[in-house]
Image 1 (cartoon, each protein chain N blue to C red):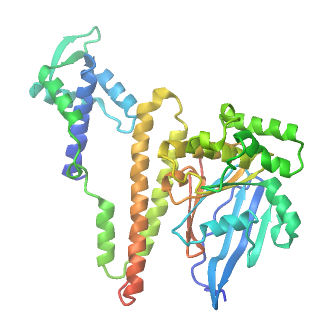
Image 2 (image 1 turned 90 degrees about the vertical axis):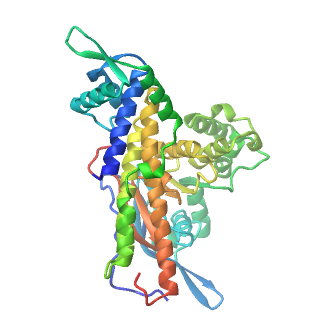
Image 3 (image 1 turned 180 degrees about the vertical axis):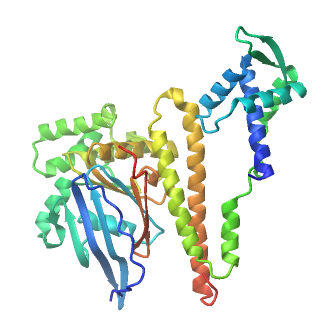
Amino acid sequence: MNTEYAYSVFMSIRHGLLALLSQGSRHGYQLRAEFEASTGATWPLNIGQVYTTLARMERDGLVAPGEQDEQGRIVYSITPDGATEVGRWFATPITQTERPRDELAIKLAMAVTTQDVDVAGVVQAQRTATMRTLQELTRSKRGLDSPLDTAQTLILDSKIFQAEAELRWLDHCEAVLSRRSLQHPQEKQ
Amino acid sequence: MIDRDPSPVPPVAEEDPGRALVVELADVSRVHVEGTQFVVALKEVSLKVSAGELIAVMGPSGSGKSTLLNIAGGLDRATSGGVMVEGELLNVLLPSRLAALRRRRVGYVFQDLNLIPSLTAVENVMLPRELDGVRTAKARQEALAVLGEIGVADLAERFPDELSGGQRQRVAIARALVGERRLILADEPTGALDTATGDDILRLLRARADAGAAVILVTHEPRYAGWADRVVFLRDGQIVDSATAGLASAR
């Protein structure tokens, strides 16, 4: 996992927990359960991550610990600064540079410039794999029909659109490569 | 005219042995003659589709997707190779028998061709049954039942221009389904629909497959191919690969 990606995951968890706290005070286990429920368990959290994140947000003045409940769990509340931060998060679009580097694009670029690599084969193998992913995602989505599943459906849709975009890009790669090989038959495909 | 390259053997798409075979293409080729040139639209394509399966066919323009669909449904004839639909070898059928088989066993959904504007939704759906000689009252009853099944019973008396794009496509699907046809052929049925409406159409086709129909869907949209049990990729008239969803998972 590269640092950029780790950072974006870290920030998503932080803001996600803060958004839940903006709905009312909660303790760590509640936050974990609700985070997983609203993202369809796409990003499972361990309780350690939740408490580490809460401790850092407390240090940054975004949340404040309250009293312990009968089971000794500390209930956290959002501070005014935390509420501002949630508002800013929702209002700010995510830019492409905050997302992880695209390993596949790098692989394809390397395949094109490396001797004796069957680029068309790389494209085809990836297309089949991504299509299987898309089939599995669609199957998961078929299982969710209740309106209560809206959040989970939208998360799955996000992954479906990503898989779709990748497949379109692979088709594009293939079309470009085959045009090249027609125009410059001496160049390797 | 068809070169027989012995090297890469095109993968034959897997089949589910527990289900009845509805359509089988065996080494099907289709060659068009254009002036002095032979154009190979399909080259030794083999494909089996069983009841309960939804198969998506993908490929760039000119890869042979629609030709494959038309041959599977008896709208076009193979130059060589065998085509079986529910146990009947289409290659040897007389034109009149072929026309009857197309009407009774095969349902088509196209992007456009679609509804007759001067007939209501229910009348459009009744049409293939009436052509089959079914009495009007019975045809109407069947048509209403299918419209109900796909959730558009309330649109029965509307004319096509009083329906939205998604509603028209649903009625077109009802027309393709009426009369218990077991082979449904859909060529870009989601055409210009938005993705949520397109998903509804796929949900419908998926439900028909789950209820025992064999469905072949031609699409250039990966999103809709994702609904299929198997996705077949065509390139230059040949099957180059196929992706099968969760082979081990129970349905």
